[in-house]
Every structure is written in structure tokens, then in C-alpha cells.
Image 1 (cartoon, one colour):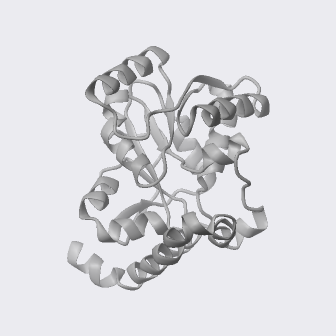
Image 2 (cartoon, rainbow, N blue to C red):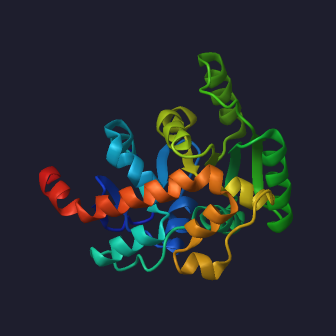
Length: 258
């Protein structure tokens, strides 16, 4: 794992996963340190992510191998605050992290690569971001196949990324696929990889983002469940229950791992 120029905050362990105590502003600053040629694995962890980690040793180990694990969950941030991470007064929300990093990165000449979603969505995402953030440097927007890359495709991707030389590589493939991609390709692509999932749909205009007051009160899960019940019921109802179980049993689990 590589070191960032931004001082790292404290860490705590939740559901077996090490979480870094970044607040939204310090998370943006950490990504502004990104430079092509330096590989960094990052993940945005929430209740669903950690519910998967509880049940999958390999996935949990992969998250713990990251350079940075941001808290992308309202209740995960509350757990961190209760466990001594005083900066964690709110979560690091993936769509905001993406937009604010691109915004602040204009002054530094930060270069961005968009990777994920359908060809129509990722093309629209590029257009929308460039309209909202004049001068943002998006060096490529690519839709991958909805399956693991072949060895030849992986080699071609490496070549394209080397030529484009992005500092930050934004991944929108959905959880857990995007986390697996980050783990597998960060060193090969030699930049900072950030999986932001639904941010591609939100900023492209494909799906509505939950209102800010809903987000602030930790109810985005209910909003999204109401808008896509058939697709998301298991993620939120089962995932949230597993997360609560994980938090309640952390003391026993952490004592074994210390």
C-alpha cells in the first residue's frame, strides 16, 4: 500500500474491517494528493459492504488490504464517532466525494478517468460533469463489459490508462464487483482507484439522488428502497440487519483479532 501526502486520521474496526476516520473535507484532500504513477486502493464502506465482509473472509481481507476505507454509511460514521474518531460527524458520501474532488481538482489539474455503467450512461456522465464543472479534466469515459476482463482486455486497458495518465480512476460497477476491480487493478493501472457505484447514475441524471435532509437523517436507504424495491430489498433489509448484528458483536470479534 502507498502513502498519501495528506496525514491519515485514526482507524477503527467495524464488522472486521478497518475504517479510516476521514470526514468529507479531509477525504477530498486525500484524493487531491493522487498522482498518476502512484497506485492506491480505496473503498467506500457502508452497511451493505460490511454485511458482505462479515460473511466473506476473502472480501473482508481485500478491504483490509486497501490504502483507505472511507465511511460511506451514516450509521457507520456514527459508530466511528462513538469509538473515538471525533472528525466523523458525517459520512463520506460517494457521489459528493466524486463531485467535490473533481471540483477542487480543477485548480490542481487533476486528471480523471470514468470507468463503468453502460456506454450511454458513462458518455452522458462525462457531458454532465463537464457542464457542471467547466475546465474539469476528464481524460476518458469507458464502459467495460459486464463480466471479468480477459487477459487481453486487461492488457489493453492498462495501455489505455497509461496513455491517458489519469490521477484518479473512478469505478462505477456496483458492489462488490467494483471493490474486487479496485483490488485487482490498482497496481496495474498505477493511479488512485475509487469505487463510487451509484454516483454514475446520479450525476448522469439517470436516477434521482435522495434529498439532503433524507441523507442527513440516515434515511437514504429507505428512499432508495422505495424507488427500487425489487432490486434493493435484499441489500437494505438483509444487509442492514447483518450490519447491526456485526456492530453488536464487534467487541468479541475485535478481542480475537487484537
